[in-house]
Image (cartoon, rainbow, N blue to C red; front, side, top):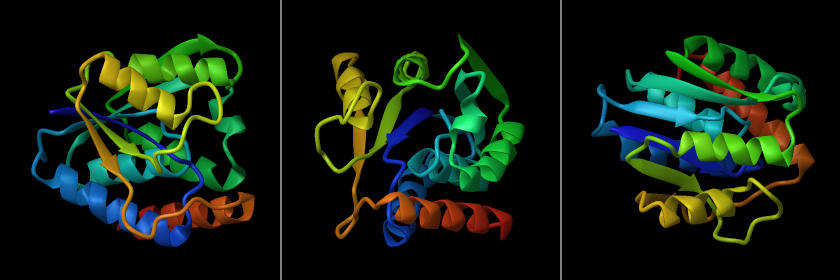
Length: 177
């Protein structure tokens, strides 16, 4: 089973815990033959990638641009490096900069050969090009089943909250959770 992920980067720390548990529940029955495909953005993408690896699955990464690492928040870079290093396959797109156009292109590549999309999504319209709502819409247009993940009480946070979720994901990965 090949599963891709899209989702919000700015989950609150409490939401991240609930999202991780929900994703683990959804993916558990597909392990160990699971292949997870992710762009490894902070938040939902990195949570998903870590769960795939924890379950003994195979991770494939899509890197949208040469400067993708630099474009991430500093708190998400170490985990990005570890996840990228653990990926069995890496598709690097030919963009120099991590722009919304590059993100959109990476999302389209990510959807090329998957059986399902997990969307960590609050259901709101896209804020810009290449966002979660657009990926969900494209997957539906392609006939790819979409499993929505938005546990009760989930919320998005401010930039300060984003740093908290980055610390949560990084610390959980370092602790071997």
